[in-house]
Image (tube, rainbow, N blue to C red; front, side):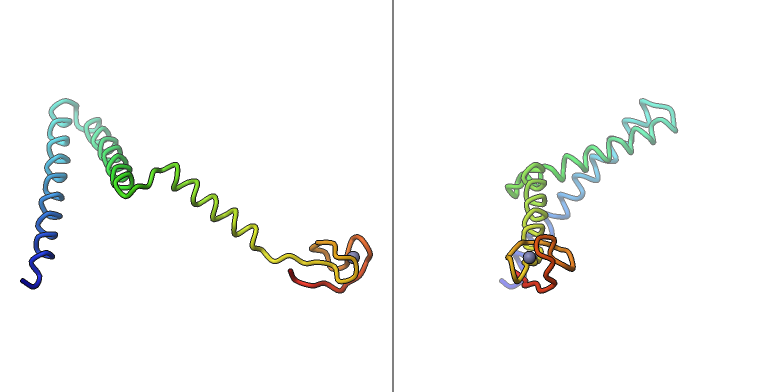
Length: 113
Ligand SMILES: [Zn+2]
């Protein structure tokens, strides 16, 4: 029984890859018949990029991730990292500042908070 599920997965993955390979070949042949050579190459590249983009979107969607939520997540990570940066407070008056001396009272004593 050992390794059967892995073989199954490999087979599924391989047939999946072959399917897409076939689609790319088919599109390439179709475009080369339809268009003269340099044009067909550019068209093929465009189609290739579009298909890859759609495939990535579909895969993310399957995983429950939309491009928008991905963007939102990364921007919220940026936001939280901005919030967790070290803050300095003046020891004598408590004002938050990033100067060497406190702009409020001129004290150079600071605490990190
Ligand atoms: Zn101060």
